[in-house]
Structure formats: C-alpha cells, structure tokens
Length: 292
Figure 1 (cartoon, rainbow, N blue to C red):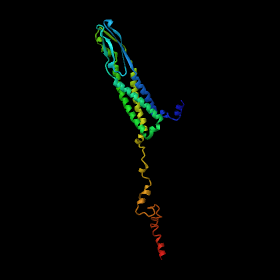
Figure 2: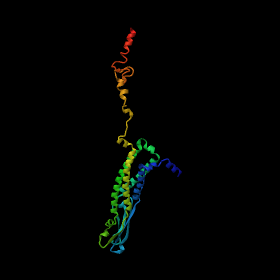
Figure 3: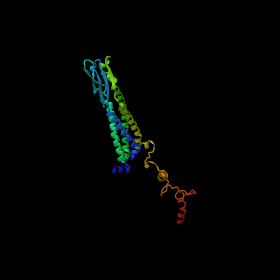
Figure 4: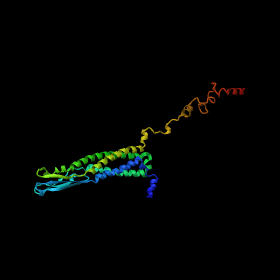
C-alpha cells in the first residue's frame, strides 16, 4: 500500500483522469463484458412429443447448446411414434466463425488496453518522445475500431441465426412424428438469450469507445498543430528584417567607400548637406597650401 501511495503521490496515475487514459479504462472494462457474455454462454430448449401410443411418448426432450455455437454438432433423440424406436436429430447451422471472431477481438482489445494503460502510467514520457508512441497508438486504435465494427455486425447477424435455429418451434419441424396429426408436439422452455443480446450491445459500445478515442490519441501525435498552421520553420529560412542594411546592398555597393560601404550618415564619408564631398574638396585646399 505504501508503494501504491507513493506512485499516486508522484502523479503516475494522473493520466487516468484525462480523456486519453479514462477512455482506455472504459475500453478495458467493456472489452471484458463483451467477450465474457458471449464466450461463457450456454442455453437449453425443452419440448415434448406425445405419441398416439402414450408409451412411446417423450415429454421432456432437452437440447443444450453453448459457445461457439456449432449447432450442427448438437443432437437429441426424438421418438418416431412407430414401435418405440427413436431418431437422432441434429440442429441446423454453424455460427462459430462470427462468435469466435467477436470473442477474439474482445480478448485482444482487453490485452491492448491493459498494455496501453501500463505505458500511460509508467512510461508516459517515453510514449510522447518524438510523437512516435501516439502515432503507433493511433494506427492500432483505428484498426481495433474497424474490427469492432466488423465483428459486432457479424455477431449480430450470427446471433439472429442462432435464435432462429434454437427456436423450439423450428426444432420441432425436424421431427417427422410431429407431422402426423395424431401426435402432439409442444414446446416447454425457450433458451434465454438476454446475455447474448447484451454481448452485441457491448460490442457496439466498444465500437463507440474506440472511435471516440481516435480523436484524443490524434491530439497526442502533433499532427493537429501541422493541420492548424501552427508549425514555425527554422529561423535560418526566414530573412532578417534589417538584412537590407546589414547584409544587402551595403556590402555589395561598388560605389561604397573603403571604410565599410554605404553609410546612412551623409556627412561623414558620402555627400554632405551642401551637395559636395566631405572628405574630397575639404582636404584639397589644405594639401595645395602645404605645397606652396
């Protein structure tokens, strides 16, 4: 407990209060709900076949099925109402592909969310270094969002088919003895599929969470600043505002003097205010008088 308190005191888990970490916690939780409600399901349906000869009847036929819903492997024995013999019948359909795909996406989402939370809490600086971590996170998040869309839609369709295939009224149609009017077939118990309906709902909730998390991960990549025009190029590519006077024509003027080029003060080396040369005509009379 002391170590945990020290980590909290150091701010290791403050990221969980921000949208980036909080949504990842929700993804972790709802991924568990999604694959557990589907992967742990088992159901049963019950019906009866009452023959004209009551001794041949079976009033408690139970059919059990479970994940991954390979219904074509689920069988039951039904009376034929002809001399006490029974027929072995199988349910119709194999819906394991959509169910297993849905559960697999849920398990991998759970594992990735847990790993991402560990990185957020203990290696956040390394994660944000050079924006490499957020960009990888963005790609993986986009892939999982797409996978949740595909798997949830596929499992929703698969669940609809499972409900149809395990409906007692549909199963009774497989029994030949029920086609005869003197025999009476009744359903007694329908399978409860509320847990499977919940799994589909959790699948689409995960889809919303992963799509929504794209925005917060995208903000960590630094691409938003580029799109917003906030990128500032290096100063070497920008001309200085006083370059005209320092490194422009002042250094390349062929008419500049030998002491540093063209100067803004005309009275020192260039033209004076009267229109003459300050160092030209003013010094020649002195030199002429010395020669005299």
